[in-house]
Image 1 (spheres, rainbow, N blue to C red):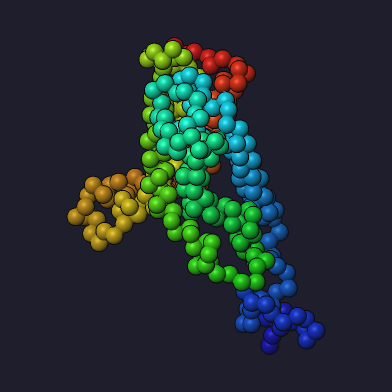
Image 2 (cartoon, helix red, strand yellow):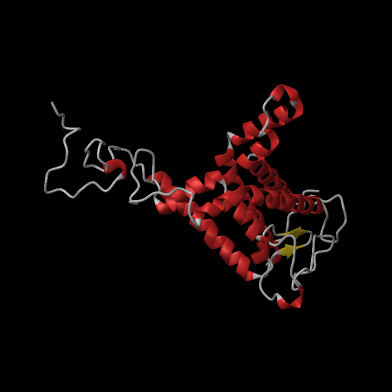
Length: 279
């Protein structure tokens, strides 16, 4: 005897389109049975990511107020263009010659943003927040077809492991910038300002997020048939696994910290206030 959950649609109903309405699935007319505010999480995710996109786009094209001795904005380091502000002791490289007249941040942000754009957590975040694929657990996505990441352009997500190598290089450069932040405005060592603490917090979160990446976990412990024969790699794999458990938190924390570090440099460079000296 058919129950209400297994009754098929009335003859005048449109034919099933597939997915959760495909033949053989329970004929539940509602898109979902959730009664909570399930839309809050994807909406908050979309708002947070959109805010960062707007801010980083403004700062990337501003091409000004990104250096206040001894601090250089993480959006602009290393400087690869000819028109960079002088950064004494900083990683400056005029690799593009005089033809590049745009902001040097446009070159740099390609690599960390590419790393984050292809990151497993961020895929989940913007797939749900912007594409509703799916918008939440137990809520069907509105798309009629689903090909996953097997077709262009999503197949390009597979280059995440290569962006990881670039992200490590960028993190090393930002580490050197943090070391240089222990100088004063006259480039004398032994100084610590509020900006130094901002840079320290940022680089710790950047490294934690980078090393918690799934690609890093695979590089450290992947393709091993016997962990007992590789005790060092097994120990590293365990440490990376612990970080990986906090990958979502580290993704957001490092996103906020890198924007905060850039904004701090902007405030000091624009003359909004002087960097307070702690010692």
